[in-house]
Amino acid sequence: MLPEEFIKMFKDTFNIEPICEDKDDGMCIFKRDDEIVIKQNGRIIAQFEDNEEDYATVLQYYAKKAGLITPHAKEIETLLRSLFVNIIILTEVEDKNGFSHSQRVAKLAEDFARCLGWSEEEAVEMRNHALLHDVGKIAIEQLMLYSPTRLRVLELHYQDHPTMGAIYLSINESLWKYIPTARNHHERWDGKGFPEGLKGEEIPLYARIIAIIDYYDEVTNFVSADWDSEIKTPSQALNEIRMLSGKFFDPQLADKFIDFMVNAYGIKI
Ligand SMILES: [Fe+2]
Ligand SMILES: [Fe+2]
Image (cartoon, rainbow, N blue to C red; front, side, top):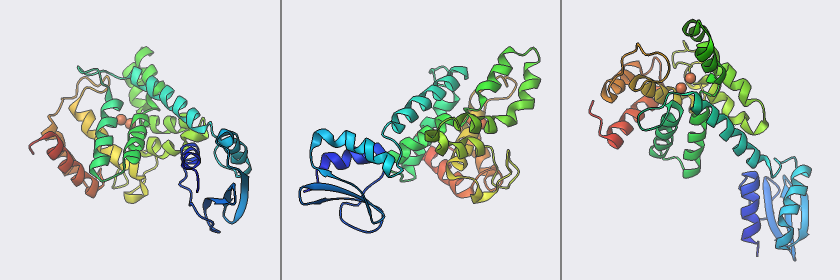
């Protein structure tokens, strides 16, 4: 009988769902006589006596051998992610409830993911992508705060923040998965966005979702030093999203987002 504890540790460590039988493809974990065998694409990479006390050491040792992410990668990811998220949130304008742009976008993105039928794990991952989408504004917000010509500098550099975000997130392998979201959340469905001018489904899915929620949040709240802009009501914002669907936004996702907001928050449009 394969020990459940080991399978759980394996999944938590590597984020891989192993196949619990002896096969020649994929990552298999199975029991042979009294030993646990780990087989990767037909090659045995670990075979050891079933002793619960050794599980952590075994995982660490064989991770390297199999070229898997080391057992510490998750902790590193959590640490770096929270560092970046905290810095970006500190530089943002708080609303009366104490939340800022990235936090509000993250909350809506997570709930919207659940509404799309995504799993709990995927919804949490959606939240992480959303929390980091504007990470590249960190340096740019500093220019805005401290430069005597701050607004002009901000305007000049605003379009750099997706690329800056990609640079920050390249610092460690564990954050690379968030790069396409940070880099491409200002692309437009019609290809007229920035920085790469990607079009339609060339734009990564997370970035297409965040583009819509980002817009909604920006027009319904004070987000930055752009105090001149008029705040729109949720209903006006949703109507604008409908008008911009197919131009700025993925039309299918825009429709689903509007339905979600109408049903979840009772917004009349
Ligand atoms: Fe942005
Ligand atoms: Fe944003």
